[in-house]
Length: 217
Image (cartoon, helix red, strand yellow):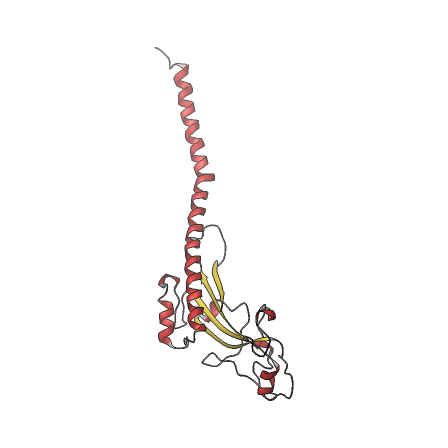
């Protein structure tokens, strides 16, 4: 009986080794690389959407659109339905925070009943903040003032709490130089923040991944 030639045996071994090497390479290198590329791609798409919605919301807010009305909140939610902004505040995966901030000058203090300066003189404070979506999802990185149902912060006076004297009305991390301090300068700015839970694939990062954007007007 004729035996299997040595050349055929070597070729069979080489084919088996090549298959093992291919599977190892796929499992350890190419598959994680493919999945990671997919995850980053999904998050980039969501980041573009979040940035656009944040900018559009801030633009409308700066022009005086009232986001305390449910019709306007549903309009905002319709900008990008897959981001899941819940106007009822009962759930969803995204939250939009709209804030009006002002520089407090001497005239502001005196208008509030102070004879000269007030505790928050020369600082930037919140005068309005409106949250659209689930409040508990994420807070503003600039602060959370006490507001009424319309989102307004009370002015305050020597005998009443408000943005002229309350520390929780101070804006954190917003440079004072960014607002003009002269009598004829612009002393108001608008901040739009959006925080959205990552809706893409999450194979490699633990915990909740956030996609966020901030716009100033």
